[in-house]
Length: 103
View 1 (tube, helix red, strand yellow):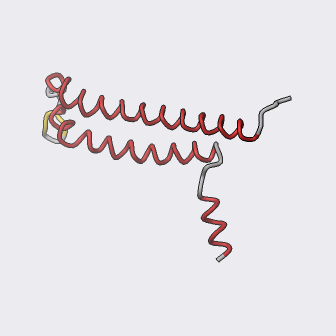
View 2 (cartoon, one colour; view 1 turned 135 degrees about the vertical axis):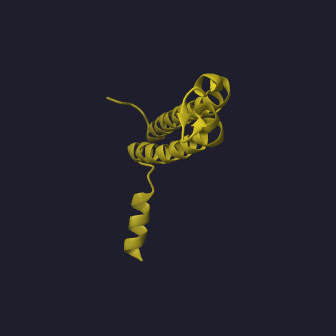
């Protein structure tokens, strides 16, 4: 038998939720850092031997690529955090549909 009180279960669920949330944020920020700083600055000389849209690839990452990747990461974060919230029953979609049906 599990002797946890409802408060302990809630605290454990909150801790798990925030652990997953922070892990996701750190991962996505590391990807963005690697693309913006790594591809745009550190590996620019190597990447400049390749062309994308008529521009050296390192220059493209520094000027546009990191922005596109950042937007993609925001979209991915939104999708993924929605799934995490559903797993921990923190999703507010059900609350919106309940309030719409009452009105």
